[in-house]
Amino acid sequence: MEIDLKSIDFIVVNHAEEDHSGALSALMEKIPNTPIYCTEAAIDSIVGHHHHPEWNFKTVKTGDSIDIGNGKQLVFVEAPMLHWPDSMMTYLTGDAVLFSNDAFGQHYCDERLFNDEVDQNELMEQCLRYYSNILTPFSSLVTAKIKEVLSFNLPVDMIATSHGIVWRDNPVQIIEQYLAWADNYQEDRITIFYDSMSNNTRMMADAIAQGIHDVDPGVAVKVFNVSKHDKNEILANVFRSKGILVGSSTMNNVMMPKIAGMLEEITGLRFKAKKAAAFGSYGWNGGAVDRIHARLTDAGFETAVSLKTKWRPDGKAMRECREHGQNIAKLWAKHDLTSPVFAPTIAASAPQVQSQPAAQVATQAVVDAAPSTPSTEAHPADCQCMVCTVCNWVYDPAKGEPNQGVEPGTAWTEVPDYFLCPECHLGKDVFVEYNG
Image (cartoon, rainbow, N blue to C red):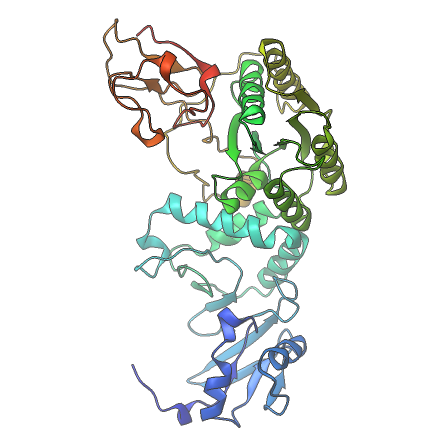
């Protein structure tokens, strides 16, 4: 639909970031005298981006409104630091639409427009990833702003975000979810991420993960190699976790660059009420582990004892790593480990974040990072298969694992040491002979 630009009476700028207002200069060239309604802080950022202090700015505050005819008004709500100082939301009366700016959004591209038209698990996973990577540092402000908006007692039939889909079916669900995420959210989950020069630190990560699972099979454990996995996915798992273990080989007596970068991002996200520990291999100076421990402490984590291994871990070192994981499981347990705990049966799929009332969401434990769905495919007794003791994925020599360069017909003894279980991403050490 085309409109005559001269028919535009005014412009509302909820946020000056270029992905929101980058076309403003081009628009104002055509209609230079049109009023721009924005917050006081937005004038600074708009002028800073577009260099036109002479534009016709009209500043607004929370509760200010504009009559747009037909009995409808635009009501403005300032939302500073969600996630810029200039941020605000706009509410359309009559239609009960909240134009929420960055809040309640996702970096999610779909040809369908509305939340009820897309896969719900995928949508909520993207919402969590968006929140954890962008809004986590401002969680206290999120809670305060949502409570302020709710105190207006305005009906909300639709939430039109600036990123991703539009919430028209039960839009309150994402508001309730945000309240849960903002409340020092964590699940019974441990995230391990590492970088490794020669797979030595990876071997440590695998053994630590197995040790955790030995003691507490109910906790979800996810292992990431920062050189191979998406940074945002790792950070989303850190957000969901009660604790993290960070590993690195030592290079020039410091940590690997990608680990350093991850820790810098984690520091900026200001996670609350989480535990952490460092580990890693070294040759002559083990400075990486000490630096990781210090950075985690500075970032506000409750840090546990670190673990170092010299050169490539031998059998003794691997046992120490496994024992370290067992100790971590006991130290970070969220339940009584003297009672039997059974690993949940989870489909091997993307993490699922349920849309529930906030009181329920805050206490839920969505466990999916260590899938434990047994293989339903029958294997003959003499197949020489190997089964992962963590997730029950079965390696069949007849099929190999082409995604990792393991050709069909490759015996387990010939599978490279760097092989990782395709489901839980742990190494060969967690596999045992398949007995049907």
